[in-house]
Image (cartoon, rainbow, N blue to C red; front, side):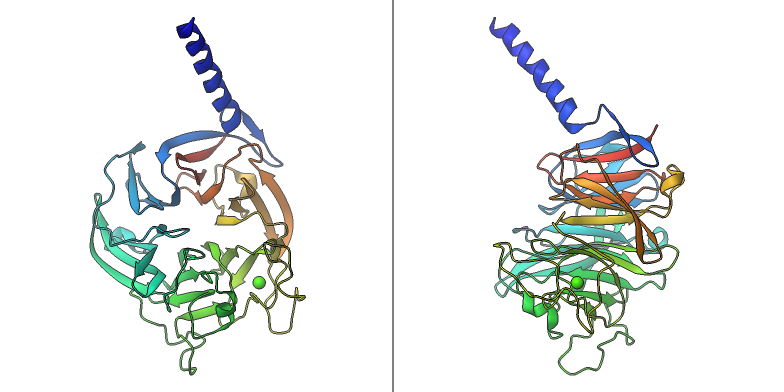
Length: 373
Ligand SMILES: [Ca+2]
């Protein structure tokens, strides 16, 4: 009896998993029908995916581990040579980005939180990556000042067509700092690939301003990509309760936080009456209520031809993927995908194979691929 009961329960349990993770089904959407393929499981709160040449994938885990997939197999040995990382609250090992000339120089960039006696902050470092090993690791950026608390580190990375590196830095929960140019909190910064400040950055030479700042008034940017056709830097950021945004990041502009927002405080009290103001760049779109947008990707693959040029956003609280279609800067189409999937989506990327890849923010996180039918 016991054995039979145990067997029956086990069977029910596996059936339940199939029906809740949705992998057994086909997903219909406006333009394509697709299915999901689990590529890897057992990732602990993965944060970012990076596709390397030679069929290798790197995946960051927030706890400070960098995992490798080689020829489709997740290796148990992590990458060696990472610096000291402080995994605290929302911090840890965060985004990954390859230098535009990675194939030649092997520079892998990564963002992470770092703590010392003065507090915590966001750092960006790079190291030369080869066969599971990072060497020549050097810090290219450190957000200042250091602050207490474990919230809003940012920190997505992208390179523009000229090779400049952009980093989103969250407000660290001290919202008024996002309007102060003497602090990196609540900004996007722009750097040379080695961390030097480009002399054409908008606040270079302005007294009291940190010269790395490119834009400000950004609450906590969690999504970033460089548009392959226009070269523009597209960003999304978390609002408080409501007021998540998509913006195009342009030199010197103020994106408003916390003077102007569609959001309110978590306790329901207002932050400001203003949803727009002179001198404040309005978002291209805002999500109210919030979906908590994580990374987003511009789809330019050929596997899903009707999606070419669309933007896919992974949602944490929203537990879905949102497809956006813009004509220039005007939103013309919006569709929710994977609403029955019931998982927080932390990163979404177009793979070199032209399919869409995503990771789920879970203790047993998954790497999943959207496949055409
Ligand atoms: Ca804004």
